[in-house]
Amino acid sequence: MSSSSLWSTVFTPAEAPYVVEAGEVRIFLMVEEGDWFAGVVRDKEQRSPAIRKNADPAPETTEWQRIGSEADLPEIHLAPAYPDRALVVRPKVSYALIPGERVQFFVGVPVWIRVAGPSDLTLFQVSTSSLSNTWFGLPTEGELAYAMRTRARRDVKRLGLDPLQVVCSVRIKNQSKEMITFERICIRPRFLSLYEDSRHGLWANESSMIVRSAQEASRVAYARKAPAHLNHPHAWIKGAEEATGTHFLRALGGGKGLFNE
Amino acid sequence: MLDRTPNEWIRALLILLIASPLIRLSANVLRKSLKKRYSAQSAMVAFHLVNYGGGTIILLTVLAELGFEIATLLGAAGVLGVAIGFASQTSLSNLISGIFLIWEHPFEIGDIINVDTVTGIVEEIDLLSARIRKFDNTLVRIPNEDLIKTRLINITRYPIRRLDVEVGVAYKEDVEKVMGVLKDIADQNPWCLDEPEPLILFKGFGESSLNFLFGVWFSKTDFLALRNSIQIEIHQRFKKEGIEIPFPHLTVYTGSETDPFPVRLDSPKASPPAAPPEG
View 1: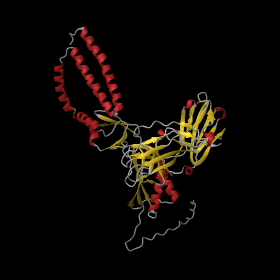
View 2: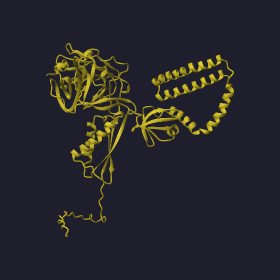
View 3: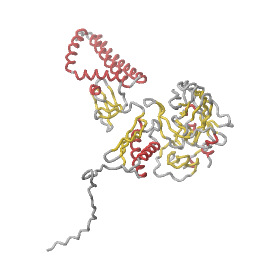
View 4: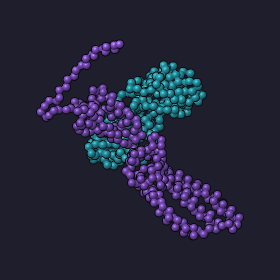
């Protein structure tokens, strides 16, 4: 089954049990004595997105959880979601921007699967890949985030169309008089919308930042619409309105180029 | 007092019945509103101050209604207070220490603290003592004076912490390889923060091992998960990489210029079967 049906499949009690495979995770859904039960199994194997009906039983070690009655949940569906915390992306290669330079990067964010019932009620959410933790801030105060080491791409085609990652576009303009080096990017999902294109690729709204000085806080603007190249995209998530002074990117480089909140 | 009219008795009773719940209600409202803005500790102290202060005022008002001379009562209470003060120096010391604790604010309700040999969660902080629930679910009451005088460690004050693991490997091992393996273990562990970066320090030459300090940062809520997993992963990974974790051993020499004591290992000979007892 192609990735297209991952987000469009409707799960009904009649065809249960199901297994949803995506990345490192397998979600088992079954109906027993009129109740839906869900079990999540995670391992190191990477699986392409797939859904199997009347699937084989789950491993014996699976921990099951009742998620609702058959009567209350006549249908269950899946929806793509962002991680539940901010994501700090550390490019494998740091990027230096000379004064006046304007660049656009593309970063792939691992998608989460939101299992939902009628009226889009969220039953639970799981990540499709294991992300380690990181700390964004000072040791005395800051924010717990997920860490991801990846390659920030200048050409979106080189990122590849992975159905389990959301492509985030980041535009940066260095308006300062000094060179700025980016070593990590903090992506805050609450400000991001999520769109699905006709080829079932997942995209975030564009974000852009103008750096005026290495010491000054940089304001980030989030586009309120889908990326221009998408034709009639389906909007899965509408990002929150940005707060005043919201920062999105923090850069570190050679003792300068530190953007504070 | 006994010559009071029924009206005066009723008035005193009404003051008691109406004012007491009102004071209690005000104290509760104050506690709830302070809890939102300030710490639970400040809210609790304010609650007690209003409750006890209000209670005292009600008592004095009722006594006045019943014909007692308040000035005389307060005078007697002053003399009594001095006497009680002398008799309860410890309580007074705890009370003053409690005020210092509120001002200094070294911990708050819900923090995990270590005082002497006691480690546990702060359940309640009062003007006289703090109540700590240990991890074996026993309650320890620590007088405020002790909290002021003793070295206190607030384990959960900051959102992230570092777990230091002492690792020793055999002298034959490659130091750089060991450091690389430790870095990889930290990278692979989901509880271990990748920033701040783990501290991997070659501490020096021990009696039987090369000693390393492996310090990994974690979110304070992940302590148990990290502590268990990181030690298991070090053991498993060292085993896989063939890195020896040595036990303490001693090599004995007869002198600086001599060879070590020769040791000969003989294979044990099979002893002949015992002869059956005669008779």
